[in-house]
Length: 283
Length: 245
Image 1: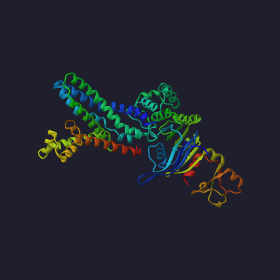
Image 2: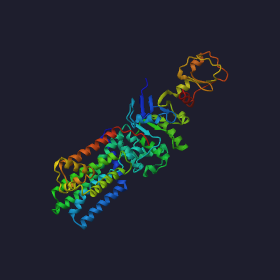
Image 3: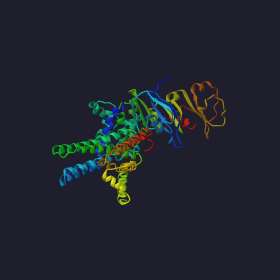
Image 4: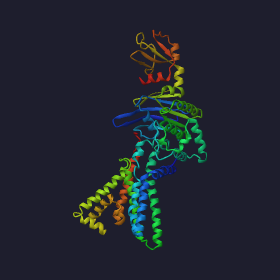
């Protein structure tokens, strides 16, 4: 059984009459990049805020197997009376980092994320949005987190910074770190993530390993006419009907073994994250 | 990491906030100028009396914008405050603001005390008045801190000052009907529980009067109200969530 760095079970959260999170059960596995996907208002940020302790769950529970957690919010905000270097020194002191090595660590991290260290002598709220985001990465990485949680990792970043951030995530994973990234940018997530979690209307509807699905499954799209229900014994979660036809996620082994004759117009291909996301989120 | 380890960080953040707020600098400079003027133009004794009455207002002004803006601005959704640490930070703010104001008050009082002792103008009752002033300062921090959950920026301080002005003007305009209360305030004599409770109610809005007219009931009453406001703050913070930006 795989260990989890973060384990959430049946998390629930209500804001008045709105049930923002109903049943969020998922695991974040170590040394992996997990994409947390869902449409606007699905409950991604609320779930992140629940596990980070900014909100209190009404039901369910969660646990971390590490205390070293980093967090980069979607729109970071900083005390307007503090300069960048003062916030970093506060952070270092809070997490018990040695003062004498701090400048070198800050320089190294700044280079890694493409942040100009000259900005540190200014108050952070005067930075551009992109630089505030980079500063938030810098602050979180300073604590050497085992688990880095990022809400919309690429928002407010320019294309070059997006590339640098993507490379940074892969470097962190290479160093044995774990990342939980909540994002709308499926194409970016596809390039870096190992696992994905889909949340819809406050419920986690699927969590799986992307490469496993890519290696072991085919994505089959076929017209409604000519398809006999029950020809393939599929789990209900692996088949859906749309207006244009039927979509199925079929294990490659089953496809090879079966003697199903596919109707004309059937398309069989390897799944990608985007098709998996739309498939699961429309179930 | 224990709460004690986090205290220096909370102290560092709040010290810089207090130092960077222009209004704090103005209030402190204004107080120093006034005390110096009274000393030079009138006497050491008047300057000391003004210090004792006005010093608690430092705590009041330092308590502006204690909670609301920080809670709703998103500043606390930071790696420094994950795992509910923002609650410890907010609770410690009261102590840090009070400590900051008390530190300044102690420095100023030491100056007055040394000069007063050297020139034999220092009376023992002044010490009691200073302690009462410290209690009033704590009351201001607790009350203004509690109000700052509901009011933005410096509105919490303005509401307290407005309350004091309204009460003062109210007493002034109804002086003929309230001669009893005004006489008792002047004489520091509060016979009967009714008069004591009336004075207590007035001292909740104008706590500085406790500095001049001390009675155990009022000191205890003000102490109880201070504890109540701190308790209410802790209760609010314990159930606080960082919901919206």
